[in-house]
Length: 166
Image (tube, rainbow, N blue to C red):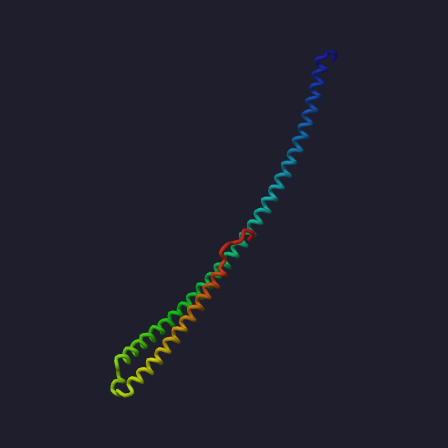
């Protein structure tokens, strides 16, 4: 072993062995770091999925509550509409009856058989009919205002914009 090439080759082998050892250590550390990053990523994905599931459930609950609210409002509207139709039908019937009575009395009707009192009776009856018509009109106006207030309340309570934070 007196040959310098052998020394150089031996030194190169030792250096290569040291470099190989260092690379093996670096590779081992890189694998550990990769495993830690993968575990952190997995945990972050798990947390993200859990949060998304919670937010989805909260959204579904809110959506169901809004749907229930809309269904209740629709049911109340349908009930009120049916009640209003009954009232309107009664009012139409009363109006037709009043119109027929007024036409009958204005034409002289059955009161014409007693001429001295016919005019005063006709005037009194027309006054009563007019009072009833004005009262019905006032009740109708009051009812219309109540409906308008109900609609205003419904529109004020209706969710018009979902908050960005919710």
